[in-house]
Image (cartoon, rainbow, N blue to C red):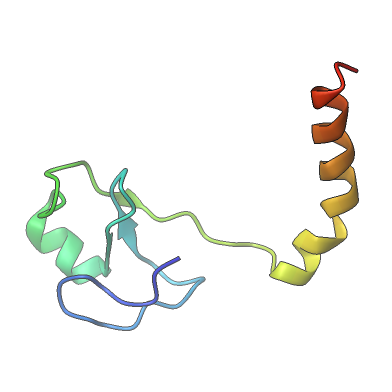
Length: 76
C-alpha cells in the first residue's frame, strides 16, 4: 500500500481513508474528490480497502495457505 498521495504527497495511514484506481494509483480523500477520476489512467477511483491484520497475523496463516496451494498443484 502506498504511503503518500500521488498528487499532493500527503501522508496516507494504512488504516486511513484513501482512494485507488485499478492500477493502484493512490490519492488522499481531498485530491480524489477534486479530480473525480484517476488523472493517470482516467480510471474509476474507489475507496482503498483497509488492512485489518498485520504481517504477523498473516504469517500465522501461511501453513494453511501453503497446504491449499500444494494440494492444488498435486491435484488433491
